[in-house]
Image (cartoon, rainbow, N blue to C red; front, side, top):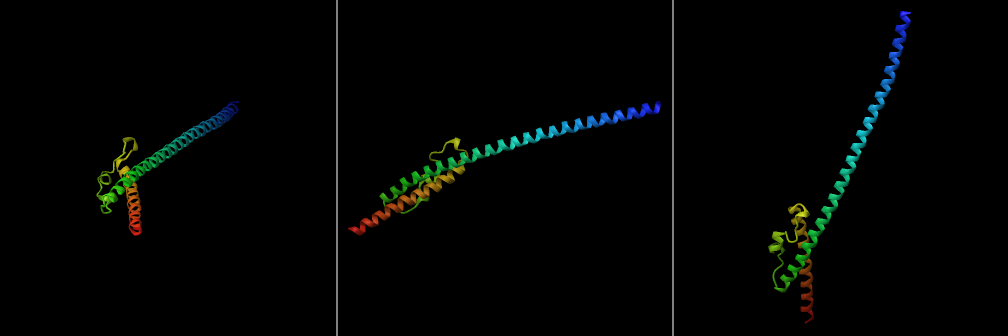
Length: 141
């Protein structure tokens, strides 16, 4: 009897280990699923944050370019009116390049870069548009 009792105990222990092993495996698997889901959520939130930042940066750069172009148009037209040479780099607004900047736009140096791009476009547009007009008028006379 003693041998049969020991064999039955061993079988019971094996069954219990098997059941607890399966339970442990399921708990561990469920834990990995939760961690994986949390990481996916973090990556999703991170992508959304980066997307929002890219949109804001794009809008801020458009604001800087528009402000620079507006100032460039004005200064280019003034240069023609005063009969000055084409020199957008000598203009004070081009050098400073912070007209219209607000701290919520972020990096000041990036704003300056975009502002100067817009300023050069606007200055050239106004200067050469107006000089062509003056040349045409001179030819007509």
